[in-house]
Length: 134
Image 1: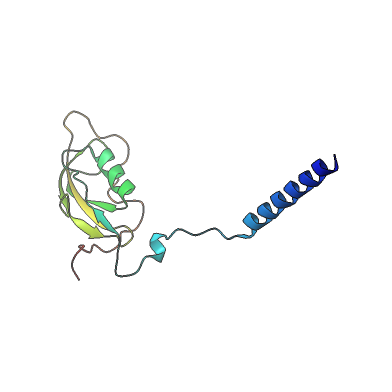
Image 2: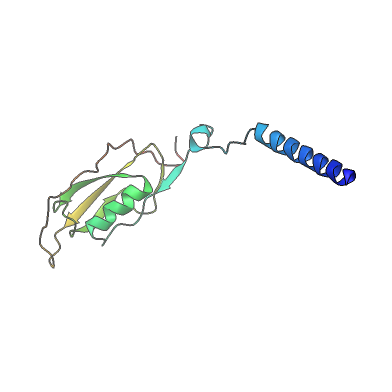
């Protein structure tokens, strides 16, 4: 019986030591984009927005980290269609925060204007810098 109590006390002491050791260790921190070296900037690839309804095009841009602006054609009603964009689809840009993509729209002949048009993104645009250039 005494051996069993001694054994239980040793196991409990080892368990407490292991828990204390684990609690005292610091967790490793994974590197973030803020801790990246300046020589390795993040890049963004401009999506192909042509023939998309504007409501979907601006959602894609915002989800991918871009700012946007309607520069011609029709106003920024959700149902209007993107006909051109600048920079072109597939262009690689340095992530400067929210690089600006300019779109030209045409009126959607099947759906009239609804709501208020949006011609600029809800946040400020940053510089557009091509990746791979100085």
